[in-house]
Image 1 (cartoon, helix red, strand yellow):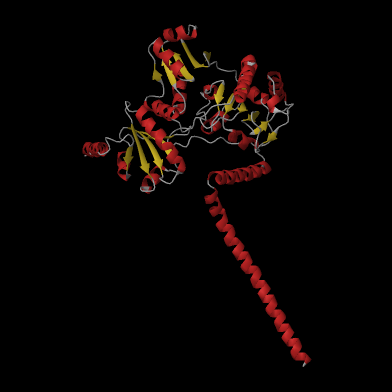
Image 2: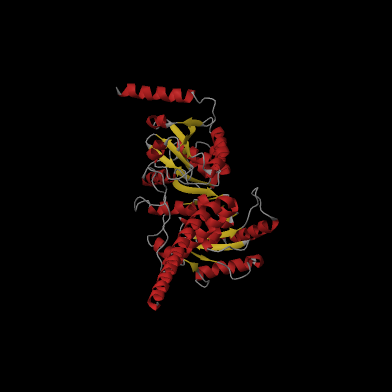
Length: 460
């Protein structure tokens, strides 16, 4: 009976695919729900009226083309036509992209770009740790991607078990590989029987088990305040374990190391990456720049970015363990943190533990490499003024700032719709107030008329 049921599901799936054979992205219905465990799926849950869904549409078609030769089906579902599907998968907003693999469901949290979505799917297609069996294979993955975590040596023992478990936690976010020791030796230049390395920024770093008191000393080294730290949102995948939580004391040191090493030295900060960057628990140094409509930086912005990069490379040994450096071409991210409109270019430092931030006292356009070094040293020494935090008053002001910013962005995007949305409630409110006030005045006039009549009658 079970085999007959599976045969029926497979037949239904085949018919579903035959009906959409010519489509780049399969259009699904609620009949898909019984078939969700058959094979691997990358699905976009959307609503036709959603502007963000419309922007993702051409990107998702390119994703489908990039995955055409992989054993995965790329599809979409209109949740306004099939609300039962949205309920089944717990969809809270549009668009939502999910990867389905058997009983496991993973929700995509990154930026809505073709490359990022394709990498998300490729990471989840195979096992958490992928095998590399030649020097060419290892060199290829190093050249193709910014960050790669590699296990060197025999895949057995406590170190391998820990690495494999951490890889399963981070699978939807990062790439993990294993290679024989004699292959890794030719790339890293070191002979090792068993080790864990991260390849990034043109070099590799070996994981070293820290002393027992290192985490305590590291937390004391970072500037912090008395406010409670802001919680970092975890992965929203229904069955995907959150990468921001170590599952046990045994692997907590490796988990912390992977969390801190999962970004390049000078990463581009985007909305999709920002809360993941905060999970490094480092001080986040952001060069605040502005890209034009085609994603390019002006010569002035490029010079500022190059200046910050020079500081990083010159003081890498001291700053790398304390700071995560990055740059953003969207000033709105930095403005939201600082709760003000920053001048461009600028430099913003965010304490990922307390959500406080630091700004240079000097005019950002006149900053030099020496001034940036003094500024960063002052933060580590506690000599630089600190702003923001997670206090109640700051949270209230942040809510006000976000609401104000949202209204302004709505007005810039569609003034007519914004006027209708806010004009109608204000118009009804004004009408109610006017009716109440007019009723009081009319009642007062009637009372005055009655008093005059009574006085006139008494006089007569």
